[in-house]
Length: 526
Ligand code: FRU
Image 1 (spheres, rainbow, N blue to C red):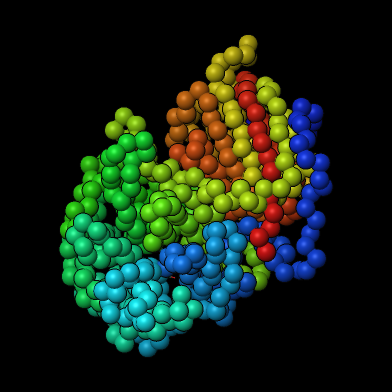
Image 2 (cartoon, rainbow, N blue to C red):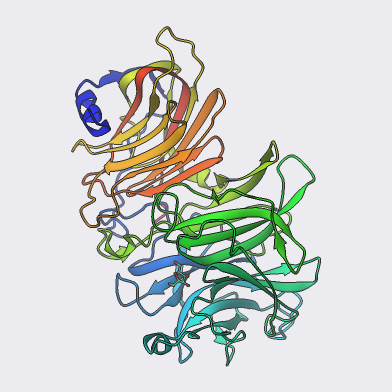
């Protein structure tokens, strides 16, 4: 029997486990009185545009208590088109206020992805009344040049704001011309305090180019990186470069994020990373293997916030929760795409191996509502949990499993978690002890008829120790999985025909011990 048949057969034999403790007996959150943001598949605690097309997050910068989120936006259609920068602000990265479109296309082209910084010392001279300007640096994509078969149609442009990002003025001419390379885009700018220069990290076809500048306007090429390293199954896009402390030590390393499309580990778009050093001129690394920030299918073009105060100290990341393999055809009607939950990146080192872990930010805890605890129990076969009090389709779950061989039956071939609905659709999250792989399986998770590229099982090699913690965020049409404090992450979108309402734990051909679990309904942010 294949996995799907096993699941269907065993679902019928599901046993209801009564071994949970209700901590809070409120009923599931009732639907809001208004119909705002209640369409089918509308995420309730993820950022989505009110309507129309969105892709990459752009220009994330923190200034005067506000987290800014700009994003690739096409206001005239739910399919990609002439790009603008949409805009929203938040004071906690969780609750968002929509603002008017920040940057419109012009005679130099569409406004593609890029970054924003606070120019604290007014190196650009674009500040006003003693206040530092916000500077956005983005790619101009000139469509008629592209149509005419030219290759120099992508340049880097600049816009500035003197009113906390509410209005933007463009610099007349692009600040970085195209040297004759077709894919030349997605500038991410940082202030390098060692060389006292701005550094621009740019994705150029199959590698990265670094530029430096004293004033954000005049740029000089420093070096290239990566032609021979990492994954090369597609074009490199949306890079990021930042320094991090290695967790629990004084060691500092530089991390380079590079999105790639196609060529991801499970098909289509994905984001790889390199850990190494940057000396103001060159990025170097001894890393041999390709590493991915997320092994699911739906976390792309993610980058980190600029200008997070030292007193906070976190490296904060979000990505676009979709994949170019099917992004334009997913079955949402009014809008397309969402942004991942915000995550803190943590650089860990064990036996000379660096891992860039992603952990949901603590601010998300403010969304927690009704709560259920599952008690320790042995899971054998399929066991449905009693979670009536919880709205599974909008929830956070935190499971602790123990993998030691305590029972007479021995360790299972695999174990995990199934989200299911009235229609019997199942999204499976599991660990195969046999294969040493963690997986998510959306082959029977709901509607997947809109694209041949959507259905599938996503896998990543993983070696846990005796315990495994699995943390999930479920939000109507997405599941984000964080294993062992984000050492492994899988982000996937799903389109169940009715919302997931059941939680089933499973263990195949052997037993696994659930040490405990805590589950919360999450409040809507809209
Ligand atoms: C990544 C990307 C970027 C580009 C933008 C265009 O998803 O292809 O390279 O700037 O989207 O919308």
